[in-house]
Image (cartoon, rainbow, N blue to C red; front, side):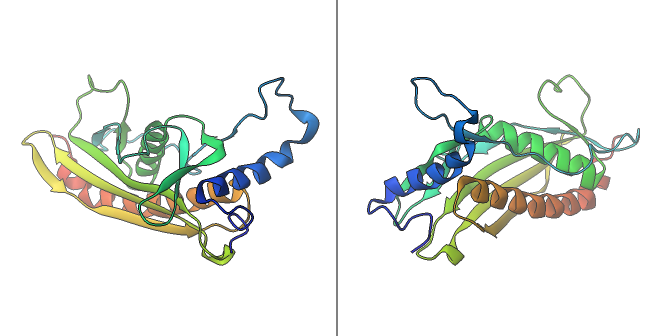
Length: 216
């Protein structure tokens, strides 16, 4: 059995075990009063540069991602057997996952594709293309053995040229990464690794489409 799941018989209780390991590192440095231990909060930040300043780079507006069922909030989704789902007890994202994904994708594509990615509050800017995102999967998948624990991410992109409404490209990117450890930190690190690989692929894809989004 996985170290993350082997000590409790009920599948949903397994998530609590993961968070308990992560929270144990806090020790006496954090006082939570009478409310019990607080959640461990994880960010999802792009580790590269902030992108281009080139005046002739395409301007692309990025919509807030549409999230599949169960992924919209700040809880970290855990896939159980069959069609069951749970969340990682005692751990959460630092903001709604849709906002974290949007910021990450905007940063990654600005850096890797050399495009001006305009996010929230940018609808009054003249953009040449619009990028829609559907997040189908962003989940921790525990296994019967520690070596099999992993995270899965799947995102569908829709790049539309605003001048004529043409759908230029509509790929789906999928990534998995192993969870190398027995706590919430290991799960968060796996998500970060999978997103880094996905950001590289998305950047190459958008760079190949940039001529179609060039302004007139």
